[in-house]
Image (cartoon, rainbow, N blue to C red):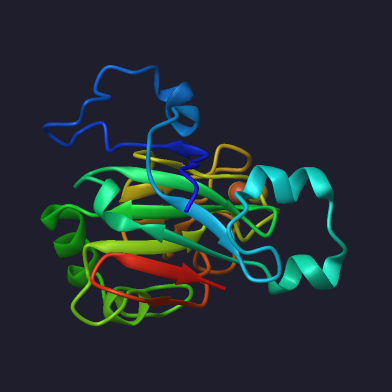
Length: 189
Ligand code: FES
């Protein structure tokens, strides 16, 4: 399995992050080590290579990736490229999970419980397609009034479950199809 990660975006408020103090504008692009591999039709090749090959749409649609969550620490977000889009892989803190559950029955534009947005028993891991459901910009973590993501393009605000709370975006950040292959190994797509 190749070691490839597009970027990481730690919670600036989480303790123990080795990336504390980084310029917030650069957090999405900090490279860290974690296991990521593209699988499927071109098993074992990391995504940058696939990207360069510019595969046909049907090939791209079949592409899956696997990664090892043990490399992601609490309060950290790793960003992986998947099917040409950023994928947010976030290890949530207890505070983030608590805030998400507390708002399960708030006045939500796109109602969903937090439990419906992660795998059973894996509340700490939130995996989301990292494109704003308004016009597709990439939201950043740690902005807005709900402790989750903020889209700088037109001000949409998502909570710690990735649910839309303010701004023009109509839907929650998408949860992709994924499955745990082991306690920490995940396959997306
Ligand atoms: S693209 Fe995110 S608010 Fe418009």
